[in-house]
Length: 226
Image (cartoon, rainbow, N blue to C red; front, side, top):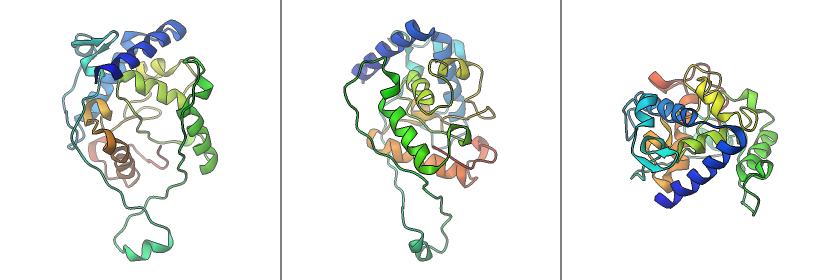
């Protein structure tokens, strides 16, 4: 997985130069996700890491330390998707409505052309399709193969202005109980990253949240998830 972390680290350093992102802000993301994992019995790792412990972790590729990086995991996930008309075949179902689903393909761009980041473009299409916006979202599961991955994705999803992802993470806005809880499952950093199963595992967490079944990590009043 080292080449992936080298790529993440390179873009992280670019954000540090461009927006003043700090090591401590990266650490806040990882520490938060590891804490969330202690509330998830399905998480691969269920250990709290303080900010200092994350900072002092083994260096993978500066500024990313081991607790800021996801493992490559074994795991599986599945979902049943059906039309509204077909629900009668599942009398015990507790369905969650899919309001939008967008697939997009990346294209060549300068690394700092953030408006054309593929996840930003897909997010805007999804919001438009669903008829809601970032301020309506109750909870999010995002791809945090590294702690920096979470920062760029919460910016792409419009939870803050570009360059502010580190700041809102450090302030606790993305923690359980915060303004917009992100990765209550523990994220890829703690829950694990079984590659092909990862996306549906995130969907599983969001469905669990929307059903109100997430136990100690439940986001109060969760209504819309992404």
